[in-house]
Amino acid sequence: MTAASPPEILRAPLVVEFPFTRSLGPVQSAFLTGLREGVVLGVTTADGKVMVPPVEYDPVTAEEIRDLVEVGTTGTVTTWAWNGSPRPNQPLDTPFAWVLVRLDGADTALLHALDAPGPEAVATGMRVRVRWAADRTGAITDIACFEPAGDGEPQDGQAAPHSGEFADAVTGIVAEARLDYSYSPGRAQTAYIAGLAEQKTIGERCPSCHKVYVPPRGACPTCGVATTDRVEVGPAGTVTTFCIVNIKAKNLDIEVPYVYAHIALDGAGLALHGRIGGIPYDQVRMGLRVEPVWTEGGSYPDHYRPTGEPDADYDVYKELI
Image (cartoon, rainbow, N blue to C red; front, side, top):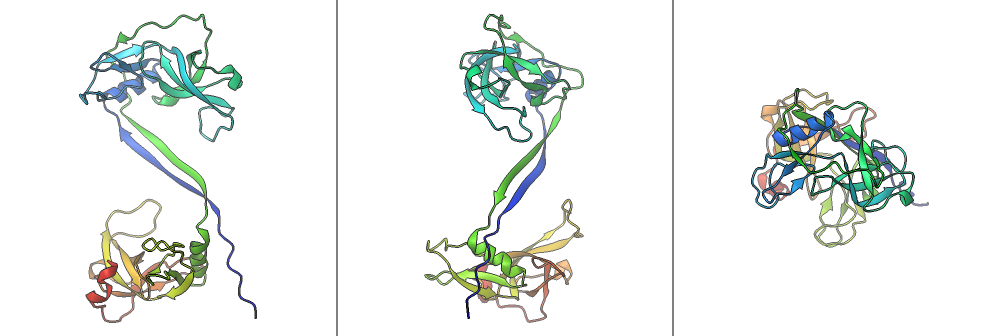
């Protein structure tokens, strides 16, 4: 009789994304509104330096600063790096250079993209100018990119005071945060996920301290040794602590209020998370004995419900809270 072969290590693309909404103070509002109007603004610090992009507090004194100035739309590259393989949503879809540009009248540099035919066309000290986007909304992308300017092209001059006042000022922005990567849960969690497909919960026992980790981590974080001894735990467990959720999450079809709990499955050395159902939310308690409820075709327990057993004694689970 031959032993069953271990499951193939899982790997899948994973996308984490969310819209981040923030309000703007007077300095950032003026800066982004200025970009919409084709104007680049900086701010003057206590020691007379002009910072672009502007900040709201002096980096040396930490004092609030509001002295806005207009700087030029041409500048000098202070350093650069070539990007031969642009990623989605980057400023240009063809190879370009990331550059730090000190605009005329500014003392600090602005990071943006430079449209150039190749790395041989980019150099520290080269002169560049802003290429404005065709449609401007009040965002850093209103600068579509920088483009080379002739060495003989005149500078825009010194920074000039600016009120920062514009009609219909931009007061808030929404930034779409997104992270794309390929994720592999590794040997230990691959076995854990494969077990869930069979409605089993598989942990791994540390050969030194004998603690059973669920989900398994492949190594004991306390002893620093590999965990290879697989142990099936549960299916029943004990609520160690919990919270009542009163705010409905977007795209989650669960009515509030509901209870989310730490559940120590029988035989496990630490608690995992799970939703509690089949009982009014205000009757959930520490020590409540629960069991998993699986939906047809589900790859993990939909929720946990009371088993009807007497509550566990506190001394049994106090080390797992």
